[in-house]
Image (tube, rainbow, N blue to C red; front, top):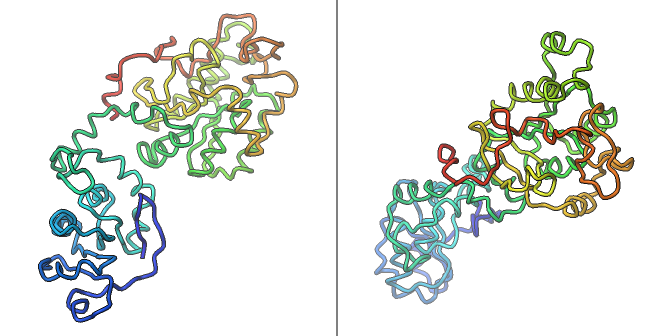
Length: 392
């Protein structure tokens, strides 16, 4: 059997607690198994010698077990372990704890259909009390529908405030945007950080790489090494529209006359054709990188799509420390003075004391390629939380 305790799953030897009739006929049993029809007054004189009580649920819609647990805790002052067994679902876990249960025991076959992360997430899903229960004695009385409505009223971005990068990624990948989120990676100087974190959570997360046709050869080698070494199983090489490329930049020199048009052709439009298949995208942007990024939050929206910036509050030394800790090699060009790497024609080395992105589009006022713009211009992200209303 699987025991769900403190939000985590534990393999449990199938402990057979005796039913009430067998328990009452014994003088030394310290555990008992109760059916939903139990008369607790028969058990009351024997509670002092009990360490464990298992309460059966005939189905997830049978609420009698919650009432039995509540009675045992409040009316009969039972202090031992209470275990709920039967076909309960993760949504009911928080309510079980509020009624006095310590754990939920479920069949392994059922658990295979309900991941451990779903049971852990259930602890966050319902912060209000279903009833004034053992776990929240002074909590407000709420029915399940009111609790769900109150939970939805909490803005999604607020749930990510204060989370570590790993926790933010895990929540997004396994709870809020499961199966609906992708990482657009440049395979740049510190791209290995997010790729490594993702590989530890879900190796099948879609990874989109823009093949602009203008990358350094070192970038392509680095890309292939990271994908293979980290075991990423859903890597997607986003290529350009050959017909559009031939019409707009036939000689490949557009970057010399109109850098914005070149980025739009080789980055913005190809990514737009793919990224909006997903409800959310992951970026590697950080506040320290440019003034334009100084106010980004861990979660924000752009053109109706949610953006997750797990590293928003990281500093350069945090990136370096993570890569050293996990033995991740940086982009090969870092050793040659490239602190930010984009396309080869528009990227130069960075001098001592210069901003890390000073080598991008050198001698121009351009600081972003455009994939993080809204309607062609940069929009600061310190807007009120109401902009997230449609995505809660």
